[in-house]
Image 1 (cartoon, rainbow, N blue to C red):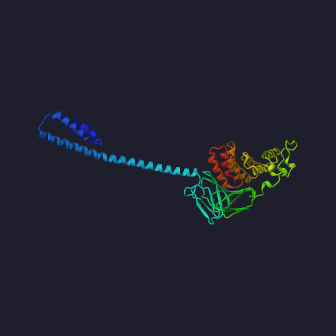
Image 2 (cartoon, one colour; image 1 turned 180 degrees about the horizontal axis):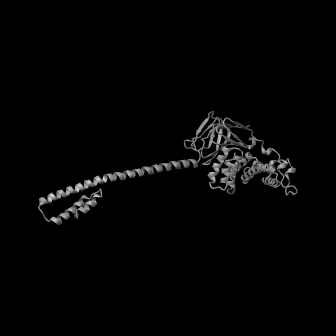
Image 3 (cartoon, rainbow, N blue to C red; image 1 turned 90 degrees about the horizontal axis):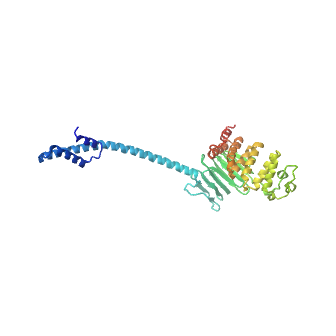
Length: 392
C-alpha cells in the first residue's frame, strides 16, 4: 500500500471530501517522486489525479447519502415520537387541570349567580364537563363551592333541572333550604317555593337529606318524586325536659336546670348546656336523649366551631348504639361538610361508607368509598371500607 492510498481511504469515510487539501497532498507526493518533468506529462498527470479525486468524491457522496437519509429518518422518527409524547402529556395535563379546577361554562366563564327572575324565559347552561343546567323562569341558583372535588349550589327559588354527566370527579350537592340533594350521576329537577321542596328524578339516583325528609335520608330512583315540607322552626319550640337535664341524678346543678323552666326560649339554651346534657345522658346509657341533645345543638348552633365534632359524635351514637344507619349517614355527611379536624377526618370518611353500606345504599357507599380512597389512599380503615362494600 502506497503512502498516497491511506489518506484517500480514510477520506472516503467522510461525505465531505476536502478536495483542495487532497490535491495539495497529491501534488506534494508527485513532486517528490518524479521531480521536474515535461509540462505535457505534468498536465496529463494533473488531469488523471484530478479525475481520481472527483471519482473518489462522487463515491463518497454516493455512500454518504443513504447514511444521511437513514440518520434523518431515525431523527424524524424520534422527533415524531417526542411530539406524540408531548401531545399526550399536554392532553393529560389539560384533563388534570379540568379535574382540579372549578366547574365552568362550556365557553370557559365562571359560574356565579344564575337568575331568570323577571326574564320570562328559561335559561340553559352547558358546562365544561359535559353536564347541563336548565333554569325555568323565576329561578335563582347561587354557586357556593366549585373545585375539583365538589360542585355545590344553593337553589333560592324556582325550578332547575340538572343533567349531570356520570362518572365525573366532582361531588354535586344542591341545597334547597334545609334539604340537600346529592347527585350520583343522573337527570333530575329540584323545585323550591315557600311551602315545600320537590325533587323528581328522570333517570339515575339522588340522595335527599334534611330534617323534613323521612328518616332523614331518602334515595330516589328513576320516576320517583319526593315532596319535603319545611320543618317547624326550632326556635319556636320550647325545650323538652328530657333534652335539658344538665347533670346526672343526685348531683347538685351549678346553674339553673332548664327542666324546671320549660317555657324558656330556645335562645337561652346555651351550646355548653346542650353538650353537658348529652354527656350526662351518655354516662347513664340514655343514648336517645344524648342524641336529641346533640341534634338540638346542631339545629341551634350550626356555625359553632365544635359542630363538626358534634355531628361525628351523633353519627357514632346513631350507628353504634341506636342502630339507625340512615340517620348516622346524615350525621357523618354533615360532619364531613363542616370540616372535621385532621385527627378524626379519616374516621369520619370511613364511617360514612359504613353507614351507607348498612343502610343498603350500595351506590352511595361506593361513591363514599371512592372519595375515601382519594383522600386517604393508605388510611388505617381501608380494609374496613372494602369489607363494608361487600355487605349484603
